[in-house]
Length: 135
Image 1 (tube, rainbow, N blue to C red):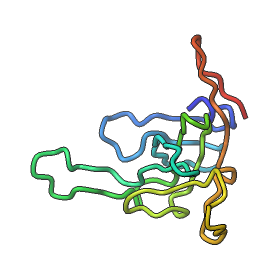
Image 2: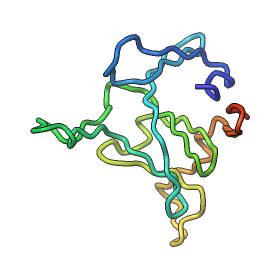
Image 3: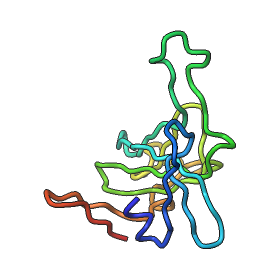
Image 4: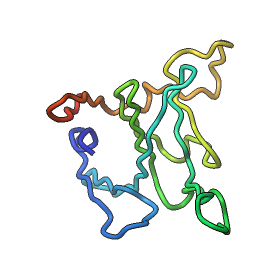
């Protein structure tokens, strides 16, 4: 939220619990629904879940549920890189997980690769005192 606010967005929080979005961004013209996700750096890419899991519920009707039609962006924070990434939902697969490439692919593939730099909106430095947002 700190990084998004420092980018010039007004950040709103949904009033009730169990809503499908975590934040609403206001750029002064449009409102956008955002789902926050934690990313993990694995094999040169930041990987994050793009659906909710209900497998921990007893007898779930569905085990996974995507966010299509319910959000506009994923806001992803990766502790290993310190980066914050704002990813439009239409740019990623929504059935399981997505990846943002930090390092070049080992097989030199370039097509269909999502570079993390393209989506990065800021950095967060964590200190013993308080988090600091850097653009």
